[in-house]
Image 1 (cartoon, helix red, strand yellow):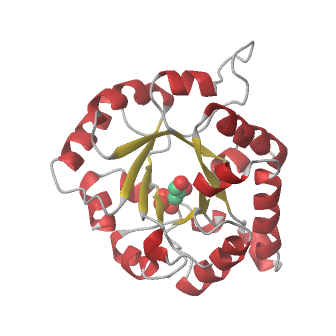
Image 2: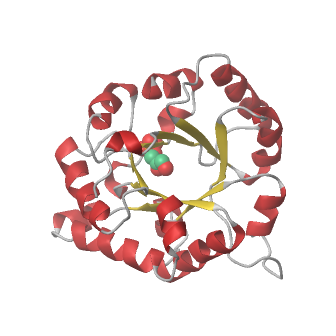
Length: 245
Ligand code: 13P
């Protein structure tokens, strides 16, 4: 049975990437919480590792969910510079971005590695925000659909049904990230439709890539869009608010 979009609670996620000091992070949250946060939606901030403990305190019992932007799949060991699922759980992080295009393309993270990270999320009860999307070359050569279908199936391979039902998937075409070129509503619908066919009805499907207040309204009317993963426009609390209001 198809679930209507209204049955999947919208989620507005800020991915701060490698931005903000702890003072800036605190003032963002205070400013955001000083305005209404309707409980008809969920809100999430994905921040640098150095900010997470401090944010946990400032966020307190507010409706904001806290995510890391990456993690390693082992619990502990000789992995200098990495952060484990256990360490994230320990400081009250509940969500983690896995497979962001900057991890895939700048840091060379493979589908196989991302699958291990998703399995680690499952083992430690962290909710993944699993990102996927095609490059401009893949789109221009007619391989966009095949690319995202492969990324999804290789990523979720071996996950149990409950994990997939609860996870969040973000379609972020690489050519739209930080470029000001948002995917058209038709492109988003087409790609989300493909992903939706391979996912349970409960899995929330976000769009990301140059989401701004002036294009968010139309994208949010698409039945396949359950919310956004926002980069640049989520660095300022007032702009982020304009997107979810
Ligand atoms: P921009 O919104 O800056 O294009 O970034 C999108 C993104 O990568 C979110 O994860």
